[in-house]
Length: 120
View 1 (tube, one colour):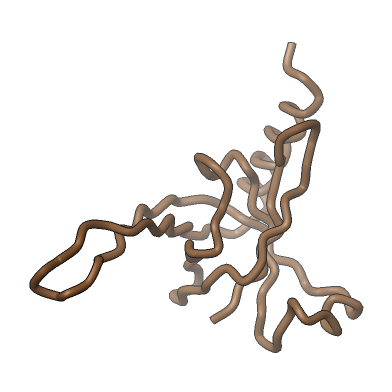
View 2: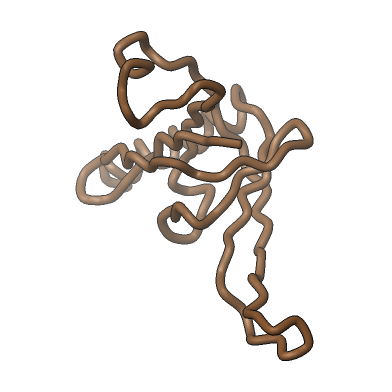
């Protein structure tokens, strides 16, 4: 029998799949040094997922974390292999967004989802 935490992680993923919007999560890592370019080229792994977008509460808009134009995304932990990183990106509606802030939502000892603040 699955633990309560596992059930919450599964439920988070199921709800995002049914009610969320399709996104592309871009896992960015440093690649090899390219002598022709004179720099390290990043490698991008694209992960198709679903997330739920939400408005910011009024109290959040007054926070130093949130800037005008930021978007809030609820992303199920099961959508990724590992935790999101601020160096990663999220694409939807033809635009690419950087991750400005990550807030895990725990079910037991592991995250069931993440609130991401996305910025252009």
